[in-house]
Length: 193
Image (cartoon, rainbow, N blue to C red; front, side, top):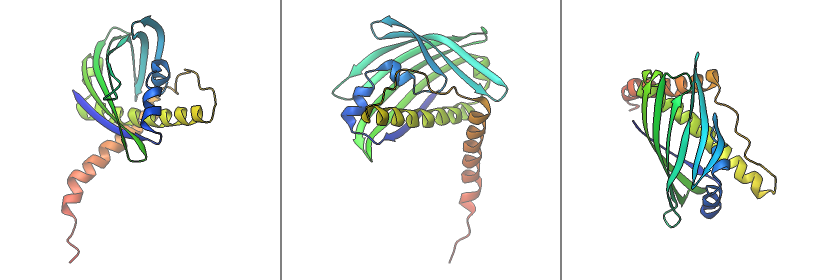
């Protein structure tokens, strides 16, 4: 499943790209993600936890930076993991490309996600909506950490707040409902002539 997202960070391109050099700090911006060990050669062990309603999915696995292009401002990460209760697996290839634009830096993220087991039971729409909510939180956390570093505050690599079930599920449901509303009701607007 291919999921694309983009967002803006109100900071210069070079500053955001330098922040992307600190993988533990970047990972700490993603709700529910935690790096547990550096394996060397741009490889890490970690966990990702997401609660969708009554179901909590927790994956343990590895992530490796397979490409870092300073000129194109592009980083590619390959991650794979198994659900800790043994009910599924996930593999993901994430490509993030940074460009100047808008209020500072535009970050385009492409995720090629493969799920099996319990996690695969959720439809593409639900997974896309949850991903959109998590990427929105990621961009806000990234913006906050860069701003705090700019002010000289110590931010460390403490993980962001975990992805909470009700909040994520509620926000993802609102995204789905707005998509349905746009699809069914906006084409039928009366002509104001």
